[in-house]
Structure formats: structure tokens, C-alpha cells
Image (cartoon, rainbow, N blue to C red; front, side, top):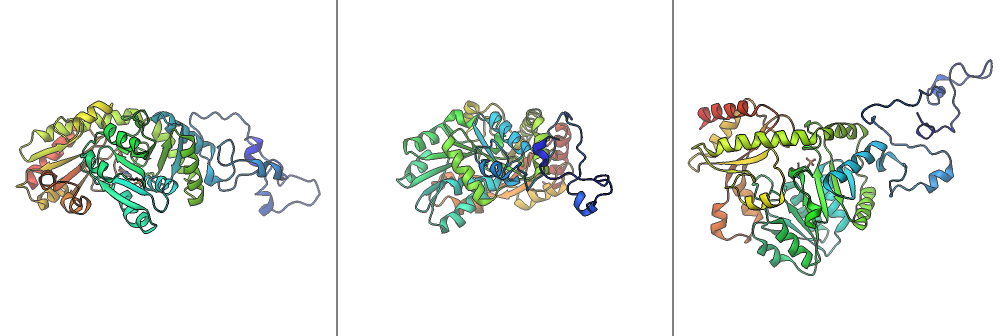
Length: 419
Ligand SMILES: *Cc1c(COP(=O)(O)O)cnc(C)c1O
């Protein structure tokens, strides 16, 4: 253990110390024990660093140490060797210069909003965005005097109509949450650029592997590391990434004000998961496409909403901008099949868990009623005929790491039973 790691200036005592002299009580020496394990323990993986307090050698060092440039350590909230390492790996993976960790994906969305928006600004959010992030804007941001405009990402004209002198931040998401439409990111980014508006993408579906947002000119990327980077369905974490030094500074300042630190154990788990990310992502992708193609052939299925399938909305944009696909997609059943029968199908599945989130090893199935959310979210954004074409009730599947043939057999038995 290095000197810096243990605050060497504290007197180091132990039960054997001080022959005949006054011995410190166990309550004291247990805090200041003199044993130091030999240096040079080169574990293959970075150890777990847990800290609130970080010790300094002297007051001068404490005063001069900077938390913001990550050149040293000041307090557990502002980073440990492991959290800095995780941030560096995430930034390199996605082609960013900087990454900031947050305790969840949703808190990373909140960080970007709170770091960049002020009273009087307008933020633009796609109608098919991750719902809790949109709710944050429509409830909290609105009440603080920030204008929230919802646009339809499949109709860039609806964005053009809403852009104005107060527009500050455009959120993008690819594909849309649950409904899985793939927008023309290049067209949306071009509109934002022309209007001098910052762009941020919820890039969770691509895990930072399948899409390189900074190469498209997007200013900020947000990841719910909870999904594929963790891969275990057992850690919550998020990240906000950018290439821009000044945007990063703003993120860091807001991050400090809000106290959005992450726990040392969670960082360890995330580093462990990250090591196998490319292999897992490829496996999820291959299995999901196999299951999706099988579903597409079924008479009970009206549409499979998977960006890598040619019939899926915005497939050409996926083909142009993405290198791979995630294991998450949605299924629309024939309109003769009532929602309660889709629910019964889910209840009949044996290989799929019923639960939120995705990106883990266990396959999951969740039915969503899109009709009710759409009506609220697209006030006049879409013409009536477009609305009619939009899915009402659909089933979202997270394809895990099970053998795809077993998942298909499970879907088949559940469909036979429930539909
Ligand atoms: C899950 C998810 C989030 C939020 O991540 P949490 O860690 O659960 O807060 C944000 N965006 C998308 C697209 C997600 O799927």
C-alpha cells in the first residue's frame, strides 16, 4: 500500500509498540495500526476503492489539490482510481474526451439538463423518448421556467417548427424507447446546428458500441450503464460523455453541486461487466435478430419493431449510422388479438422474466399500452393518419443470453396457449 493511500503522517501504532511506555488502547491503535502489506500486489483487475474521506499528507496539499481536473483525489464523491479508470474506458469506447459517472441513467439525463439549461431556455424532447427523462422535463424543468417542446423525431419538420431563439438543448434518442423507431439523426443534428442548439443523445441502446454519436456531430452522449455495460441486471449507474472541454466543465460543476457520486463497489462491478461488453452485445444482437425474424413469420404478429429488420420504421437510418443492434425490440400483434391475451401470453412464458430494465442475461417481456401515452405526447405533432398507423398495444422483449432456440420454443408454446 502506498504512502499516499494510507496517510503516512498519522502515528502508526500497534499492540507491540512502545516497550513499557504507555500503550494506546485498542480503540486507538485499530485506527492507526502500523502493519503495511507489501507493495506489488498486481491483481488482474483493479481493486475496489471505497472512500468518503481521502487523506492528505499536509494542509498545503489539501488546499492545492484540485477536484475538477481529476489529477488527484479530494473526496470520495469526486472520484477514486477505479471511477477515473471507468470514466476513461467509457470515453474511449464511445470516442469522447470526457465521461462523468452518475448513480443511474436517469440521474445522468438530469445532470445534462441541469448543467446546461437556465430559466427562459427551451429544451426539445422526442415524443418517443425514455419516459422518466421526459417527465423530469415536463414536471420539474417546466416549473423552473424552462420551456419544454415535444417533437416527433420521425418528422424533422416538427422539430424545425419548434426551434426558436430560446432553444438551447435538443435531446435525441435512437431508437425511440419501446416504440423503436429509428430517426434520421443526421437531419435532426443538422437542424440543431443551423439553429445553434446543443445536442444530447440517449445512446443506451447502442451501448456506445453500435453508434459513434460524436462522429455525427452530437455534443453529448448519455448512457444508462445499468443496461449493457453492467450486463448483470444488478447495478444502477449512468454516464454523461462529451468531447467538449467547456461542456465537460459545466457537467462537472453541476455534478459537484448535486452530489451525484457513485459507490466504490458498484464501480468495481461495472468495470468487471465492461470487460465482456463487446462479446455480450454481439451475442444479444445475434439472438435478438434470430427471435425477431421468427416472430416476423408468425401469423399472430402484425409487425416486429427491430431497427435491423427492413420493415421496421427508420431501418435505412439504422443501416446508414449503426454497426450493430441491441437485444431489445418490440412486437405488435394482429389487431384482432386483444391486449388481455398479450398479457396472458406474457404470463405463460417460462424463459422470460416480467420486469423493467434490460441488457442483462435474463430475457424479459413487458407489455406496453402505447395508445394512451401517444395521445398525451403528440399533441398535434402527427396527422391523424400517422397516429392511426402507430402501434397501440405492444410487447417489448429483452433478449438475454439464453439459447435463442429455447426462447423461440418458449414464445411458441406461450402463443399457442394464450392467443
Ligand atoms: C433504463 C434507461 C434509462 C435510465 O437508466 P436507469 O439507470 O434505469 O436510471 C435511460 N434511458 C434509456 C433508453 C433506458 O433504457
